Length: 270
Image (cartoon, rainbow, N blue to C red; front, top):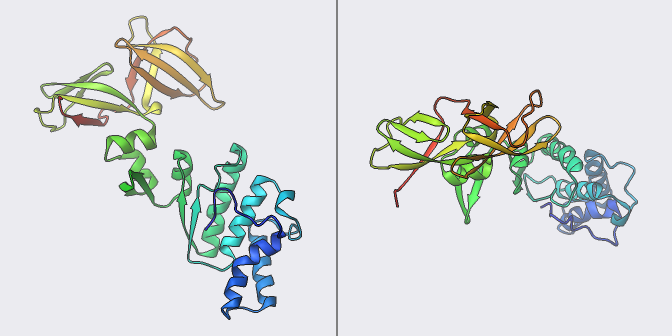
C-alpha cells in the first residue's frame, strides 16, 4: 500500500524504509540480508532515487518521500498495490510528473494498481479501467474513454465530465432548451422534463447582440479560456475555448452545441 501521507519511518534512512517489508518477509524465511539489500536498492533505482539511500525522510522533498513510499510498496514484488490518494499533498507540477512515472513503474514491474483519487483528470489519465464510486457503490465501470463519452447517469456525467446541465422541456418529438431544440430519439413522451448535458468544450460561441448567453467572467488558463456565462433564465454555464478568439466580459453571444445529438437525462415532472 502507498499512503496519502507517505507514512515513512522518520528514524530510518531511505534504504531501511524501503527494506522494511522485505525484512518482514525475511523473518518468515523468505530472504537473506544480502538479498534484502539488493531488492531494496533495485526498488530505489526504479523510482529514480539512486544515491539517496542514506538520507532520512526529513531530508527529502514531498515528491521524493512519495517515491520512497512507492519503492517500499513495490520492493516485495506484490501483484497488487493500493495507492490511496498518493499525490494529494504534492504541488501540481510534481503531481503531473509523478502520475505518469508511477504508471510506467507499475507496468514495468508487472503490478496492478488500485488508485484512489478525487481528481477527475488524474483518474482519466492514469487508469486503464475506471470505477466511479457513489455512496460506497460502483456507479459505472469502464475505460476512461467510455465513461467520459458515455456516462450512464447524471451523477457520473457531472462528476467526471464536469458538464453543464440545462433544463430541457419536451415538445412533441423534440426537447426544447435555451440552446436550441434537439430530437427526443425515442424518449417516452410521458417524461416532460429533462436535463441537457453540455460539456464545457462542446459549447461554441460567437458575438451576437441577439444571442442567448452573456459572458460574466473569463479566465486565461494558458492553452485555453474558461468562460462563465449566464442564460436569460439566470442559469450559469461554463465553456472552454482556444485562445485564438477572445470574448469580452459583458458581451452577448450566441451559444451552440458542437454535436447534433447531445445527451439528455430524463427526470420525472415532480
